[in-house]
Amino acid sequence: MIMYNKLKEEDKINLRDVWGDLGHKQPYALWAYRMCVKPSWVEEGKDYGLLPTSSGNKEYWVTVEQARDLGMMATTDVGAVLRAHYISSERALISNGVTLPQSTILENLQAIKEAKPKLYLVKN
Image (tube, rainbow, N blue to C red; front, side, top):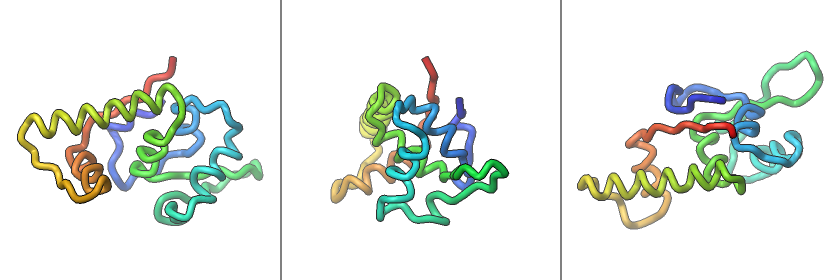
């Protein structure tokens, strides 16, 4: 289990650990390809990259931000908890008088990210 709230934005996380924390049933290699390698909005070298291995298997790193994105997109119970967390964080910001930008959803997510909510992923 990764303690995501202890990480700095520039830290890199092993993608296999993220996959495990999110509780995906899909094989890791297929999931990693579908979620990081294939999408055009995910940039190699910026959002993810290859880790050196001696096994010949492809292992990837992802940024903290990319791990959050993957968590919010996850169609697992953990993904649902993460989405609820970010929604409640947004509500808390608004109730505390923080004015969130209204023009795009991306700006709202950026404001939530800047507030640095604590995020814990718990395995059942």
